Length: 147
Image 1 (cartoon, helix red, strand yellow):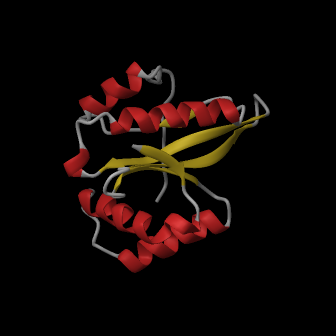
Image 2: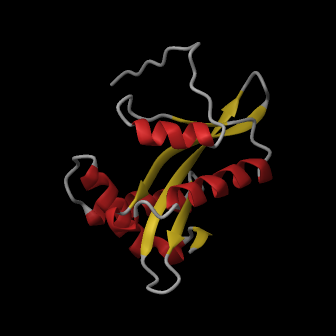
């Protein structure tokens, strides 16, 4: 398995698995929109995306997408792990762990203050994996959003 940081070279195949991810979360299939979204994030350096690639078949097995953020109080950069997805046929092979290892390594390389993420309260498997990697559940803050 190869873990690579995505560039435009990866775009068409990355868009396919990203579209699958969106469908998994009950969004309509939109390969053109998925491609445009990812292309804009990469071109504007608004995201860092890592992809897991099967070395034999060259299939894209999974990805993780990070957005840069900043801590005013710590005066340092941070990362938000916004998306992670493993294609169904590649689940239970440790791909999510390999991607998280890369994310942790990348956070250290970029001298980030922290890496944040959120997951559904029902997603116990993901919670266990994140906690195994040292992520701590924030018990001290409420998060709000406005649509």
